[in-house]
Length: 225
Image (cartoon, rainbow, N blue to C red; front, side):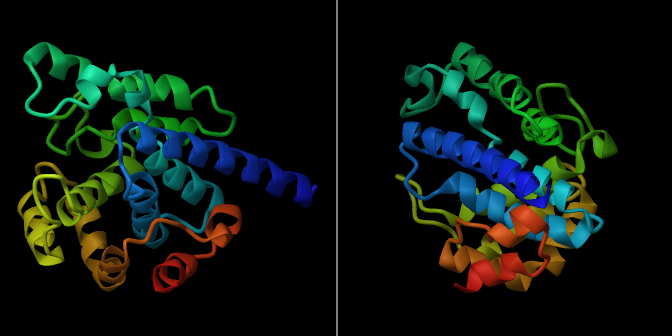
């Protein structure tokens, strides 16, 4: 029975990672953004989620698949250089709901699907698609929001080099209580030494021990390898 359970989890993980890789390719993302933010979000989750391997897996998969709904966004919008028009922006804002419809159909991904649906929400209620605020936003999505900003700011873009970790940290602290849950920011600060190494190394994988068994030390090991 243990073997069957692990085999099922491995199959779910393989499907989730294949979908995330497909999206990264379509967006011409060569930096493994989806895997990076999943790995980094997992580092926060293991510090704040009770010893429950299944919940850690859900947070990892939710972060990994956060933008999967962009598969349903036309190339002319998704890959457009320059600012989007109002109508294009409205279409882009449908990607969390599109992603939820995909992820919620995957066996064993219900909590992950809720993170996908909620990853653009903001702590002060000014996000989308549902305008959730505070604790109404799934905890995994609140953790992810901090990490997504960290990765966006510290990664290279066609128009600029990645910024220093301390620049991103300053912005995250500034937006605590508005864009970000202060508790999520507190955990980010607790994890700062590990995250600095992960960002420096551009960690893009999480140990199979975490995904299959919830080994709380594996993210740090992954960052060091």
